[in-house]
Amino acid sequence: MYKIYINDNLLVFSAGNSDPEADALVAPYRGKVKFLHQYIDLLEKTDRYQKVELTSPDPDALFETFASLYKLIEAAGGVVVNPAGKVLFIHRLGFWDLPKGKIDPGESPEEAAVREVWEETGIQEIQLGSLLQSSYHTYKTPKGKRVLKRTYWFMMEAPNQVLIPQTTEYIEEAVWKAPAGFLHTQPKIYKSISDVLASYLAQKEAVKK
Image (cartoon, rainbow, N blue to C red; front, top):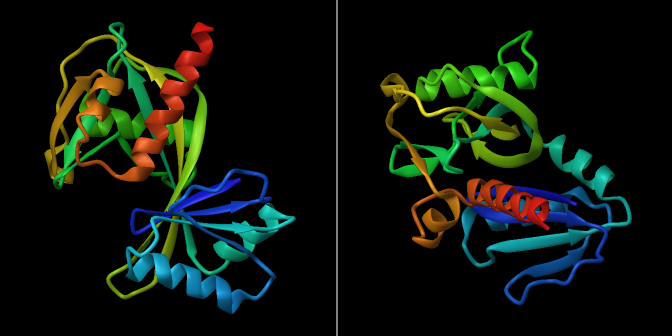
């Protein structure tokens, strides 16, 4: 299954074996790219549906077709946890987020993730963990070019230390927060980031069992 956020609405490619949500539009993909364009436009330009699920016997091939319509940019970031179990958040341009950024030429996703966390929050003692998941979202450049951004999310651990938000990147705050309680307050946060945090919390609960 693939999950791509378009204008904070969700596009899913699946084999069709999941239970559709009541407010989701579910349709089979029959190989016609023009119809794929129509679903993209629907999610980009309206809020009629918050989720569109396209089913296919080969979701991998469907995703490759979708990705071919975009310029791909890769980024990396971290779900950074301190000894108290709090997660490191940043606040930028009105939204709560997790530290992340583009992968530089020659960098591995792991190297980029650690560098971006350091640059955006100032923390220097970071223990890199495993890959949690990849997320996808789209946006348009000022010239109207469609971009698909893949972000690799890594688990990280870090002791409490001085946090220095990267103000040159419009980051106003870098703070530790208990993720479950924070999400319960319904903060202004992108759905793709909420999805990453949900994966982290689910993994955390699975370890307890």
